[in-house]
Amino acid sequence: MEESWLDRWLLGRFRSAHTASFGKLSALPGYAGLIEEMREVMRTYSPTDFQHSILQTYRAFFTTPILSLGRFLVKAAPSAALTLLMWCTPLAYRFLVGRFKPIAQNQIRMSRCKFAEQAGVEACLRACKQPTENFFREALEVELRLEPDHSTLSCTAELAPLTDPQRRLQS
Image (cartoon, rainbow, N blue to C red; front, side):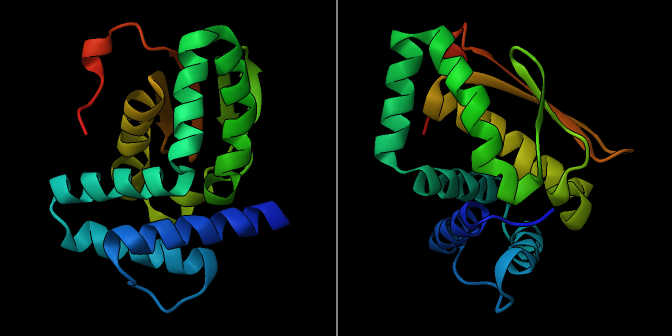
């Protein structure tokens, strides 16, 4: 997959947010450096500290104004917000996981996840699936369910309104 200017810019922003949360861990540039950093932090951080720092990375990457706008839209117009998220999520995460394709009104699928392929199944679960689901629930008040298929390295994402506010994670 050829990287666009947007992919390169988003990767740079994500690496900056990641560095702010974990510290500089790799001298390698670009995506290869991010993968090396993920492997290192999974090896050295406790599961609790790791999850906390990944959530910090996501918050810094998306910024408070964007997250506040997202929460407002989810509360004011849930259906429109989910449609917008179904459109924005593939753009915002393509640099990290690859291309998505819509398969239903509230589902998108990537046929081969670049992150799982390069970082491994453990990283898929610990650095992507769990923290991304938690982040969407906590920061945007939206239920995101990621269903990775480790045999094909594909993943299906499904978005839905958060029906039980008690399930939101505390910061």
